[in-house]
Image (cartoon, rainbow, N blue to C red; front, side):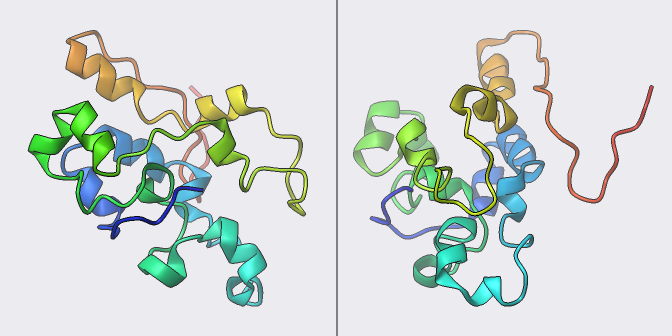
Length: 154
């Protein structure tokens, strides 16, 4: 889990500059992580510590952009984000496998073994943005459909 060193602005604040990444995140289980909990589990800190880890301190439900990338209070300004070194100096985190394993570990009551490389593909929210930045042909990553939508056959 990311450290809570700076205030969160909310995932919607990321959407303005990162619309493709935001849309990809919206299609992941992280964006709805708190919703899968029962009413009793939504009051249980053992469950919330992973399904909504920043709810108490930052008033942010689910696993948000800032859960993994750190509070955007100081790095969200466009001039900061254009300077990767500065953005990291003021709080932008590049999460690694260790960050994910804070929740995706053997002690979780409902998780199957965690394959970091496979799961990383399931939350790919950076490929499209990087392709656009480089002027390459954009090919959207394969993401699961948003909750409540069935995949349609061709």
